Every structure is written in C-alpha cells, then in structure tokens.
Amino acid sequence: MRKIFLRIMLPALLGAYFSTATAQVDKKVLNWYNTSKTGMSTEKAYKKLKKITPDTVIVAIIDSGIDIEHEDLQGRIWVNKGEIAGNGIDDDNNGYIDDVNGWNFLGNKKGENINTARLNVTRIYAELKPKYENVDSADVKSEDAKEYALYIETKEEVESNRERLTATIGQINQFKDQMLPNLPGMISNMMGVEEYDEKSLKKWKTEGPQQAQMKTMGLALLSGDLNEEALQGQIDQIQGMIDGHYNPDLNERDLIGDDIYDITDTDYGNNDVEGPDALHGTHVGGIVAATRGNDLGGDGVANNVVLMSLRAVPDGDEFDKDIALAIRYAVDNGAKIINGSFGKSYSSLPVAVYDAIIYAQENDVLFVHAAGNSANDLAINSNFPAVKYDFQELPFTHLLTIGASTRVHEEELAARFSNYGKNEVDIFAPGYEIYNTFPDNEYQAIAGTSMASPMVAGVAALLKGYFPSLTMAEVRQIILDSGDYFGDTYQKVPGSNELVKFDNLSRYGKVVNVKAAVELAKERTTEKK
Image 1 (cartoon, rainbow, N blue to C red):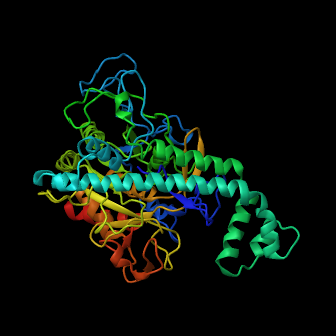
Image 2 (tube, rainbow, N blue to C red):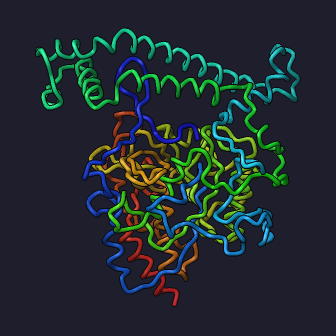
C-alpha cells in the first residue's frame, strides 16, 4: 500500500503532507458511519435482529497486522483451536507452526519482520535495469520489445518520483527556515490586526486563495499541527519514501530469503500477526469488529465476528505471492470473508493472485477489496488485484470493489480521493472521517477506501452470521441490491469539481445500507425455505 493511510496536503507551496488522524474526535464524526442520517443505518438494522442469535463468522484481515491486545478487540480475535501455542509444532498440519491468530507473511523464522518495502514499480525497474540500462533502443530485439517498454516506463516513474520528492524536501526546508518564523506576522498583516487567536481566525472572511491558504496555515499553527517538529517529521517521511518506496537498490526480501516468484516456496513467515506497525490493520479490524456499545472509540459494524490477522501489507507495496498465499490461508482456515484494504499499480504475479481469488470463490468465500485512493477512473488506471484481468476466463462472483463515501451527500458523496469506475467499482461505503481503533488502546479518525472496504466486510459478516443459510454469493448480491440509490444525483468526480450523475462512478450508483440489507436478507431467506 503506497500510503499507510490517506494524507491531506496543507494548502501551501511546500507540498508537505499532514495526517488526517486526530487525537480528539468531533461528536459529528463519532460513529457517523453507523447512523441513519448519512451513514449505513447499522443501528436500525440491529433493532430488527434482536430475537436472532447469530453464528460467529471469521473475517480475515489481510493487512499490516493487528494489535490483538487492543482493549476494544478483546474477544474479537480468531484463535486457531487446532494449534497449541508456543510448542513449535504444526499441530493442525496446515503448514504453519504456532499460527494461533493467523500468520505473518512479512517475517522470517527468527522473528524478524519487513516493515518498509519498495513499490512494485520500483521492483520491476530494479529487475530489468541490469539487462537494459546500457542498451540502446535501436538494439532491442523484437522479442524483448514489450519488456524493454516496461523498463522505460518503470524507470521514468521511479526516477521522476525520486526527483519530485527530493525537490519537495528542499521546498519544505526552505519554508521551515524562511517562512515559518514570519508566518504569524504575515497572517496578522493580512487580517489587519496586531494579534489573532483561534476565534478571530475562524471568523476571518478571507478574500482569494492566498488569504484562504493563510487562514488554514494559521489554524494549523495554533493547533500545533504546523511547527518545526511537524515539518521535520514530513521531511523524514518523504526521505523514507526515497530510501524505501523508490529505492531500486533496496532488497527488503533478503530478510526472508524466499523466492518471491515461486508460489510453492511457502516455508517462511512467523506468527507475529501484529508486526512492527499495525496502525492500518488495527484500524481496519476495528471497523469490522470493535466491540459495540462499550463507549470506547467507534463501534464495529458486526457483533458476531472474530478477526484472523494475516500480515502481508508493508509500508510500500505488497508482494503478490504473500497476498495469494494469505487468501488461500484464509480460505483453508475457515474465513468466510476476506478484507483487502490494499492495492497497487503494477502486479508481478497476477495469475497467482487471480487463482487465489478464484480459489476463494470456489469455496464460497467473499473477497472485499478497496478501490484505491488516487481519484482515478479504474477503467483507465490499473489497480491490483484487478476487477478483471486480461487473461481472465471465469467471472468474479465473490469479489466486491468498494469506493469511499462521505457524510456530505450534496455534490460530495464520493470522497475526493476515492477511485471510481462505472463498471469497476461496485458500490460505495463510508470511508472519510472514520474514528476507530489504533494500536496501544488508542483511537483516531482517518480516511481512505481502506476504511470503506471493512465497512462492507462487516456488513457481509453480519448477514452471514444472522442468516447462515445464505451463500456468500447471495450475501454479496443482497448488499448490492439493498444499497441507498444516489445514481440520479449529481456529484463531484473525485479529484475535480466536475459534476456527473453518481451512476457514472460505480456499477450500482449506491451506498451500502445495513438496515435495508437485513430486511432483504430476511425476504430472501424466507424465499429459500
């Protein structure tokens, strides 16, 4: 995953990124995704389920890892009953030793773990570079033309991003040293006052984009989000991207020592399902399963689930082999829903991932996947795992691709960062200002289609648990058929101010509605009898 979670750009010329995470949450944000006004009507759904005792459903979270000791996830973590913890034996003969709560595909047997990884585009560039870096295009053999074109494409993307990020660091340093000390005085002059505070700054009626920018920066100064320490943090983060994501000389997989192109080479990993940075996975898991009604953080969507933690998503792009094996692990160990809040622009083993998704499909397991956060039309831009592969023969009947919606339904229903696609994104779900679990018993609000996907995974688990006679294919269709239809409303295309009918942004033109899904599940369950 290119970014652990969505970042927003401070409207200044420096281009620095500031996290959407907040220590204190606005009451309007808390649990909005479960309400009926702009959310999924989850609370109303549970009122219709009071007399039903649900089955427990296993949801596999393929992610960066989960803080399984989090206070709001107690009793919500899957335990492999066939495994005896800590005895160093593969008790259940599933090929994984001491996999009590899942498996870590980003580690080795010594307990060491990968955290930072290259993007897949960088890996491809690094692999092709020795073959083509000293070759003139006129000398490329016809049988190598396609591969050479890929080399040129990946080289340009990697090197241009390294240059861009290096330039951004220079801009931030310049801003930090030259503009930041003078910023309060500049704001005061623009406001026409000697001093200002938060109240007066908020009341300031700005004129033009420059004053609006200064107002935003002034508020960031007062809140502590904009200072030397924060700017240095952004410099360190960007430098980390240069040294990690876009570093062709990095070989992070040496730590594991496996062949990343051999799907049969499975003797690697460990049982550390949290890993060194479980922020993203913990938040995703909490959206599905955080204990409901305990006044801690935000409530999970489903009250009848346990989470299987499959660590396969580093800070960088995931390895296709890990994803394929994680999907197969989930299926083989009883998961009925797999959440995939990850994605990338290039794939090195697309057939392996496709085969794994089909394997899940053949075993009636639903794979819910985030659409991505680049404000791209997926009909034009690639996002893997793909909605449909060029080589694909069987249709996907157990795949859902999810866009992110907001709590503002007038023109801004689709989150400004969300990928979209008339035939590529199935449905939207809340993915902006989502307050839920962070590691170490913390809670914060972040945004992304990574948050929208587990909303739907939670709904699928709820339906399967309360209506166990439904197949996962039927659950999938119920979610799609019962969503709130906004297709005829005009909404902004993510990343622009262009207005189009919401129907043009997804296959169904809908946002998930849990109450309506429960009602439809009751109807279709009755019809099956």
